[in-house]
Length: 254
Image (tube, rainbow, N blue to C red; front, side, top):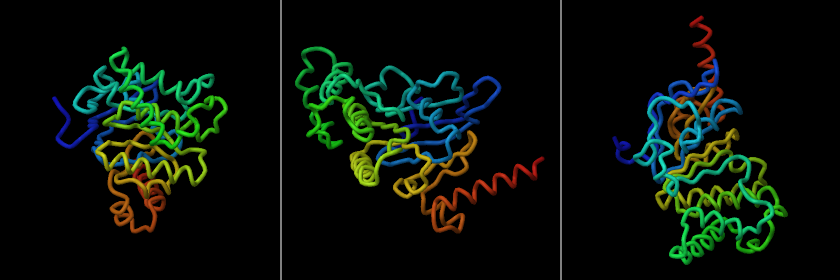
């Protein structure tokens, strides 16, 4: 069975348990190509677990989860899905370009792909604005620069789906702005982006939002629709309204 038309990620009843605790509770959601889907909620609500499930690295995930027409984690998805974790994934004893050369060789091994690898590395460096730092050791970079190296690695294969776990945490406002501009450029090219954050003002930069709390999706809609439905001026206020409503329902159910 393929994904529904126009859908990059499709989850039905996605559940993850750790021991006696249910981390994700039967989630249904989709991620569309050419759109930025924001995954927002407080720390510990299950955002990272959901993202690991999408990229196929989460153990004991049940339900149905299809990515670009294949089961999540299928080997055919490796060059088509880019994943950036919260901790930058770079070798600190290599230069920026050496890091990208290494990962490009993993994606496209063999001499026949040498020129294509070189072009992919140069393109990725340009997209994340690190060309002037390509000869610097990754260990000497700032935290924000290492984050950009990790993002460049994820962009090497021109992925159809880009999964970013808190990519702007700890970054200064200028770099956050520049990264979000890049995310929108990628979406305009047709890439599907799933971006997690616990910073509610970043919700306004997304096309669609999945608002999470305690392993559940409280809402799935556009920022405008969420504000309108809650009668609030900000997505943060709408989220708090939804949290209060959920707590009230739980209290009445007892």
